[in-house]
Length: 244
Length: 218
Ligand SMILES: Nc1ncnc2c1ncn2[C@@H]1O[C@H](COP(=O)(O)OP(=O)(O)OP(=O)(O)O)[C@@H](O)[C@H]1O
Ligand SMILES: [Mg+2]
Image (cartoon, rainbow over all chains, first blue to last red; front, side):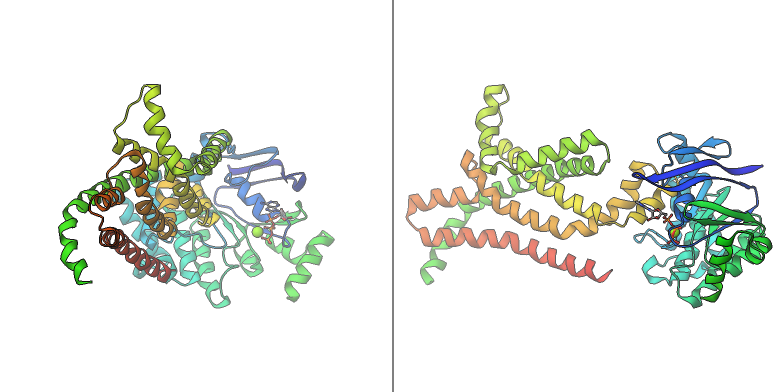
């Protein structure tokens, strides 16, 4: 069963079309990694899925509900498809615990006690039980991103979108975030991950999508797309990435 | 100098009545300007065309008219339209309106200083506009807006003397009346100046303390 379904998506900024007719779907429990050069439209595509961007052509459905930023259903869709950002975007005026409990308490209207207890469990799960009462500026980048993942999990989403979750991190902090993501994948979380971490994609992804210039150039299991790419543009991109 | 210290205490009780009026007008106008400013600022950042446009127009119009003229309008013209107000009421309403554009700009710049990522994170956990403002944007915007908010309060305290033009016996008018009946201009106006200073200095001190504190936490 597909949780997320994109059909013939087109997206323009002004008169410039940056996503050209992209279709794909994500099944329950699947991990899909999106790779591609800078400016290829990876973030834009991801942001269309939870309605942070509008799209002009085609249709995106989440659990069968059409993603439409002008519709009342958009808020419900967003509680089911969580998002983790490159720059974490934690709420700086709240502790780690409050960041995680905020959505459950104020959006999902869960009882405060229960939400806070659950938030503590989630922080424990990402290895940050001891930092529950710290404010984001007091945490390292890797810790902030793990709190952000806990915040996403707090909504008990059906899927999580990750937009280059480790790109803003110092190299020595990347591992701790990828480890959390790996464990989520192992537990069967549905994930769409925009990433430059080819090792992670190879190991965790069920499917890799290669985007270039707003076009979905190639997709398939990681061993095929990453090891035996068919399209010359994919070959070229991977050669450059692996050299770097 | 010794003459000043001998005479001054005698004039204080009358001037204190003016202080009471000054504080009443300042406080009332401050509350009204804050509420109106919040309304204008919310309209401007609402993303709803007609609302944003209306608020911008109100801000431009009100800011282009001298506060004194607004006071005259409310005190002298409103009765012709069937709305009579006491001088104090008119002063509070007039100054509140006159100051609302500055408040709106203070709040708007606070709101716009908040990173877009905050809005996106809030939307991505399913928040609507109300929750986004109340839980995420405003609590952070207040920290940014507090120092200019404090400065605006001090300006309003001083401009409350405009209320004298519509017969409110606030501090500056009490001083003027007292001086013209006693001819002790030096003593009385020195006292008046010192009293204004005594009211604004704590505000200034509080303000710079806030700025220091908030500056540290980033
Ligand atoms: N808000 C915007 N307004 C106008 N153009 C935009 C906007 N956001 C993105 N674009 C353009 O859309 C295209 C796709 O951008 P996008 O950010 O999705 O790329 P990306 O693949 O995520 O790149 P990166 O790897 O650098 O994050 C680019 O050409 C970019 O300049
Ligand atoms: Mg991007």
